[in-house]
Amino acid sequence: MRLTCPLCGERDRREFYYQGAASMLDRPSGNDPKAWSDWLHLRDNPAGMTRELWYHEAGCCSWLVVERDTVTHAVQAVSVVEAVDEA
Image (cartoon, rainbow, N blue to C red):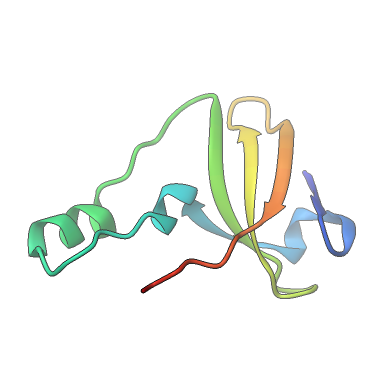
């Protein structure tokens, strides 16, 4: 599988580190232990289109959101993760 980094161009997937679902960017607010536990431990395992986090470890060191089909591995889009405002 090859991914096209928006900054570096097309690269082999071995340059990247898979982190998991892009929903990990949606952190819970507040100090509710159950919300944090659910965010950290509960995961879906869908077949089909997904949004995933990948880190370009052997390249520009950017975090990327990759939209791909988990059945065919066809990549639909790759974008750089936008900064999260913690304020």
